Length: 297
Image 1: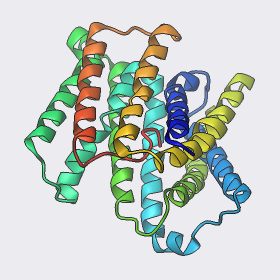
Image 2: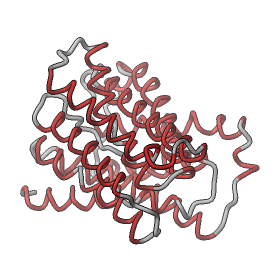
Image 3: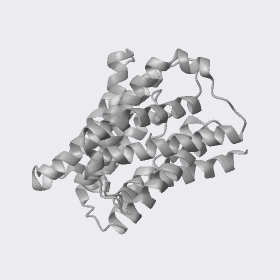
Image 4: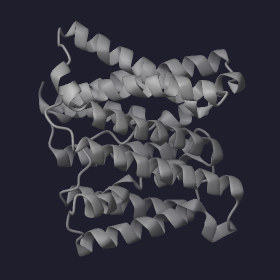
């Protein structure tokens, strides 16, 4: 596959990721049920794709990394739940942009855990991103509103736990990204089944035809197929190209929030978006901390 086709694959994938927030608006189910459905359906697609390609998982590598896989999957559960809870409490634009604080948390975690050098440039990026988050949250305009604050906290928490997943993945050795993702989706499914039952999520789920169709699309298309396209393309493209194209995701989410869902996008939102995405771009694309995994994993 040539690079132009790989770029088109990645572009398509990022455009899919950018619609996750909008799609979630039509799924009136608890976040744990959405996460369960997404993980289960996504895992099925990836397993089916491997079978069609006559590729087998590296069971030896999986066994060697099983502890890290379980821990990263648990963090992925929290990451996804926080992301979908954020969509329920605040606008898609606010939740997506606050969720995009992931690179900032990764920089801080890498400095504390991996002992990576925290340069002046990275410190400035962290500060600018936090100022952007404050601007996006709307607190400068209207003060703290409980619902909006909950949404921001959930989104930022989701970004934090995503950064932890990426950090844990750094400790895995000799396992492919496809095997890692397949196992994480399978383990998320296993974790979310008892969690959903214990929290009474099934009793409070409002299952409609539209919601069920949207959940199927989210699982099959936005998770399974999108992840396959993502890994196929990133293996053939430079990290910088992947990083640049990944910013289509939040920009599209903000535009859909404004024009499709008619959610308010203020000057503060735009200013915050520039600060958060600008800081993330500078920290990732000009440094060594590029997060290669998908932003919506």
